[in-house]
Length: 141
Image (cartoon, rainbow, N blue to C red; front, side):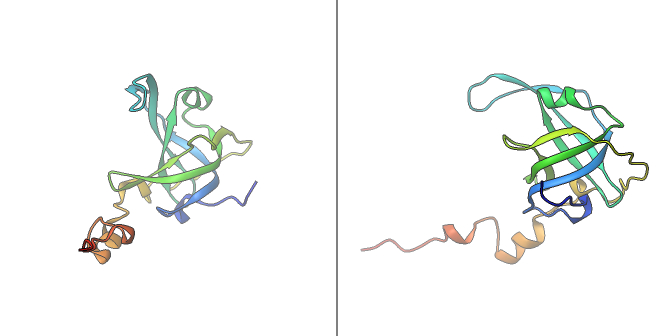
């Protein structure tokens, strides 16, 4: 496993995220439909934190039942995704979450990365939402 990182050091481009944190809040799951095949899935957005900060962790289906509020957990191979301009930690197909054999007493929920807009400054500097790869070009005549 790669080196463990702290929540406070995560950025919108963080990939392969390995960390240990405490589940501070775990709301009741809601049922959502898949945009691909219309099947139903359970989803919750838990708040996890360590001593450097907090972030929303998106949990689907079986992963919801694998952890409880107050647990210390180890996230392996997660990634950051921007949802409505705010950072969320996701597991995706290749990530996993499991109980951690550590005690986490002190957490910092004041530095909640999911409550900060993460793209606005970078996007303003580039002049909007269009990336460099999709610049308009004149058609050939």
